[in-house]
Image (cartoon, rainbow, N blue to C red; front, side, top):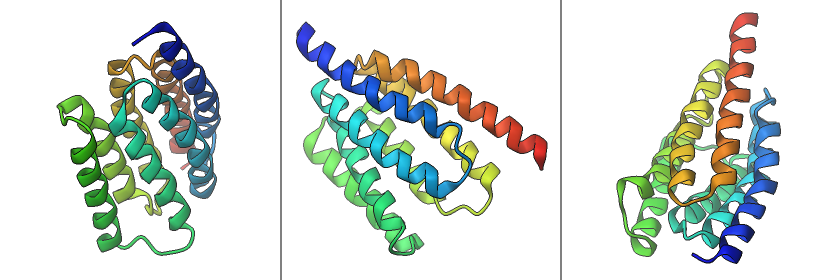
Length: 167
């Protein structure tokens, strides 16, 4: 990867990362999902530039999933279809390694629990999936996103602590 590609990919990731940090302070699921659409668009583009095909596919599906979740109920069959389509696309466009599976695993977990009525459980899911993205972003040299994955994990953990304390 040349320096220009590295720089452009990480610069776009920086914009998406600022959005991600802000999401960490949100408590309402609807606000989190809307913010995540903006974040995933920017981060997905940065991952594509840096060679992270699976990350790009996963982020694209995340945007679609979040937008559709406001219009249709995400029943178990709908969730399974979304997860399977994402896996099939990733298998067709990227070499599947454990690292390349991390975005798929993270998004599958998030998709499965996205309709959780328990805000504590939902925040735990967000933190856990962020940790998987953290590893993936580091592996594709998306160092800006990696750094902000770390910071976002901290902000979400802090918000989780405050939420847990108020219950």
